Image 1 (tube, rainbow, N blue to C red):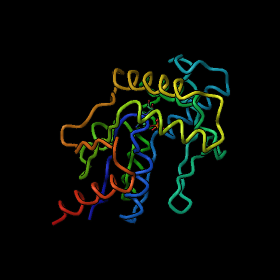
Image 2 (spheres, rainbow, N blue to C red):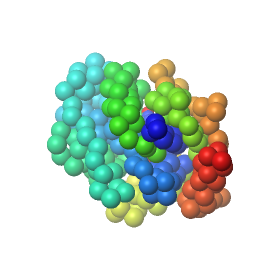
Image 3 (cartoon, rainbow, N blue to C red):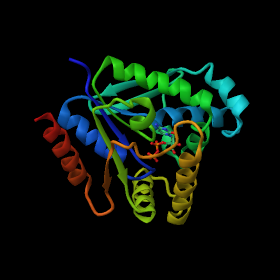
Image 4 (tube, helix red, strand yellow):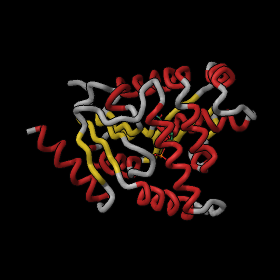
Length: 224
Ligand code: CDP
């Protein structure tokens, strides 16, 4: 029997990673947060003083990058050149940088290759922007999560506060999200767009558990 693939796409702060984690736990399969890969690329560029919009320098840099994903229980751990950077990639500067490097085709091709390799070797719930449209177009289950930009900014701001990151205001978080929405949706290769066959769920007024329940109903129903 082939591996099961569940694709969860959507814009920043729509709840993808929380929900992908819940669904993967319920299904007993691994969870892959593909955004972490673009974040790791951005972190490396920032550390080397490379402008994350500089296509030539960033694509040279990715020729020589080692990104590995491991799992500790249900948590994903990401290694950049052997260093665990799972916590370090969550700061706002890296979020914006990730969106910039993600629009560079050389970066995407390398990350997508890695993502497809993982999905070939095991069943996955994979979250990102282009999973249902480009990375795993044949995924059996595809979901597209949305929420109002105000709600998404509020959620992301709350997450940052919980992590002790308080040097950014709610208004700035909202601006970062709007910038990434626009950047992610307008890039040439694999932009953020709902796959035709994806089920769209507006999460604005739902808890993560309620969204996961809805997804599990679809997955359970289509098995019958
Ligand atoms: O968690 P959040 O939604 O804020 O972002 P993320 O999923 O960690 O992704 C960070 C950035 O990486 C996004 O703004 C996208 O530009 C990019 N990304 C992408 O282009 N393709 C993916 N499959 C995943 C992320």
